[in-house]
Image (cartoon, rainbow over all chains, first blue to last red; front, side, top):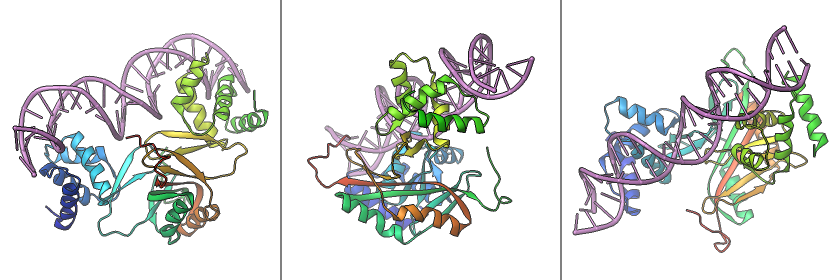
Length: 149
Length: 149
DNA sequence: ATTGCTGCAAAACGTTTGCACCTAT
DNA sequence: ATAGGTGCAAACGTTTTGCAGCAAT
């Protein structure tokens, strides 16, 4: 186990929800925390498969969902119908700007987003769970922007 | 043609982009503008099919994309990996709050969102194309909230 | 006459499910 | 012992693609 602190959080979460504590789930946790940047469930499955892991696709999907539920990972959607995850471990919350030409993802944080979602939820009679804020834009510096499509 | 004004906008857009002006595309435009609320591409295809239209699935997908490009429709993503569209025609811009329990969608608008996306883009050296802001929350009034899952 | 668009079906893609076996409790 | 998790493969739902014919320019 590479990250005992995160593992502890996960273990507690699993116990509380009467989910079983299995080695496969911690294998997924490790691989997910180790992954730099954003990744899809299938990416992680392939990565595990490549490194000889026996963990199944179903378990990867199931476990990532659990890790998002206990806030060790964030679930993201960049408008391409693929669910992506990202480690929350020791990182400040942030949002994303995606270049519509080259697909580059820039992270930013804006203090207004610390309060707005909750404020709006309350005003509408709802209790905030989470939010997603994505900006789609174009690189002004065209030299850095390698158009993909 | 139920909406000549929108049709005109679409016609101009198609011309400018050297896309052909075909009856099928206007059939899709009509059906899309007529649709209340949010809909997926396949929903619209089924709806057309039911009303005896000959328009194919491929054409529906292609046309909705074009309609989003020319801003007659907005493209939305509510975190379930389905692309949804919504008519922009004579409606003010707004964002969405989705109840994570019952799936209900509430529209809201907040003046800060008129300026924030552009402001953030500029600061990062990008040129705003569009943004998406979704709040996921829970109905406080549990009587109104019919939990789905 | 070109070239792009169409319908159709099949393929692709990410994701979920059914099942028999296994294992943490 | 038993509820729940696992691996595997097959199914699923949405979206994209390949292709031959067709129609807008």
